[in-house]
Length: 287
Image (cartoon, rainbow, N blue to C red; front, side, top):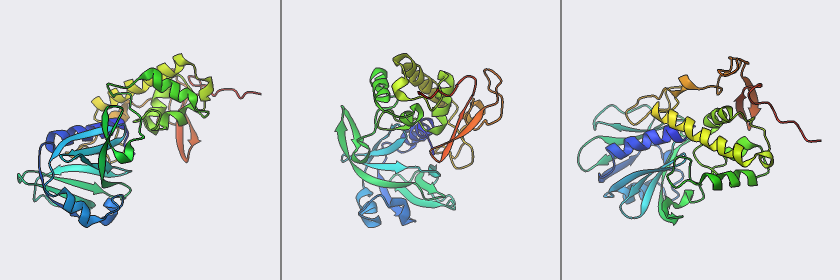
């Protein structure tokens, strides 16, 4: 699932190609793509016609198009959702779900989703902590790349949970934007095992961990994100290449780049967690 760097790459592309344009017509080609819009396809397309896109915004892993009437089109990319900018008249993609045409006759916006786990929905904008957010994600915390992000506050939030540090890091109500890939990479850089109890996380360790998450996501953003297959692309259909720089995620049995110990893969929340047994020793259980 796309994490902060991948979503930011898409947001920047949408800002460049879509912001400032007025929607002429919307076509819903697969109703599952708007299942989160409870009022249905006719309401969705009718309300968007004539709307002006004022900006493309993001918080953490969440992306939306801000509209001129205090509403937003919230995009859930899911496992395979793509927001593509294509010339009008270009052949339709096999898994095209929603098409947005603009009144200037320029390139159209297409929502393509092979697995249909993602989708689009309209939401009202509400003010939260001096920032306007779609009402459906008003509970999402700021991410480490937000100019108003408060690291000390985030560390306190992480330490307040009685759970494993990786579970806390993935909790989007505490810190947003970090998913399985960048959590493993940040924990490796901070030399922390994913199962360390949050109550045993010191302030210094928490600060180091968040700094590592910020650093690795900034590096991934410069590389265009992480693409393991053809499903994650930017608005021009291009893949990112940060997977070439991953230190532990997906590197099971390969030598750790820091100490040479084979990377270990462990089950984690129906997924996997990767770590170096030497650099990130599992915390001892308290007796």
